[in-house]
Each structure stands twice: as C-alpha cells, then as structure tokens.
Image (cartoon, rainbow, N blue to C red; front, side, top):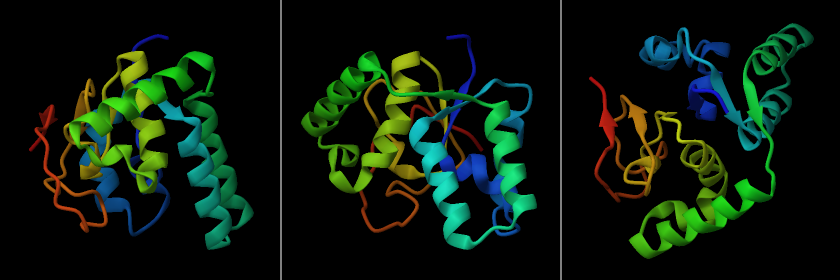
Length: 159
C-alpha cells in the first residue's frame, strides 16, 4: 500500500459536524495533501453515527463522498492475524486496547501498524500502542471518555 496516514473515526468525521469543527482544525495540517486511509471499522462507525443522528440525504451524501475519496482497508487474513498479534502484545503490555471495550479502536490501530503508517487520532487510548506511530494533539492519556488513567509513552506528540 502506498504511503498515507490512517485516520481515526473521530478525526475523520469531525469536519462533518459543527461540534467537531475545532477538532477538524486541530488536525487539518496533518491530513491536507495526504492519502487518507480508513479502517473498515471506521466506515462502519461513521455510517452508524449518521444513521443514529438521523442525518439527511445531503449530509449522508457528503459523508459517502469523503469515504469514497479515502482508501478503505477491508479486513483480510493478514490483517486479522495482525489484529490478533497486536491484541496479544497490548495484553502483555497492560495496554487498554486489549480490552473488549476498545475492540473498535484496536482495528484502527492495527490498520496503521500493519501497513506501517502513522495514525492521526485525538483519542488518548492509542498512546503507547506497541509499534504504533501516533500523531495527536491530545494530552488525554485515557481515551476520549477520560475514564481510565493509563498513560503510555507518546510516539509523536504535536503541539
């Protein structure tokens, strides 16, 4: 796969809502001019959110246009094995991505690790993921909900 950046669901979808405009502006410079790569899990989450919120046709069409412009990585046998290996590595390291509650985030992380691409995310749960190059402006070491206080070393923390 050619170079690019894997984009977490929250960062990718931020520009589609008024509430996310600040988040979108935080990461715009890291996404502009890049090939945007999405895990299949992120596409499912984005569509679920649109359905749950009752988005109209115009907004859903814009979401689909943006998804189509990105490179979506479907799960194949190699990615599934990489997922299993990364989950074991996270479990052995005591990293929260090994927990069932973070299953969706693990698919995003494994997509970046497997293809050797950085992950652009604002969710602190990705910090310290074995083998992950993380691009973030988040200082939250617990994930977007802030309920856990696990803090691993950042790979790349941007101001």
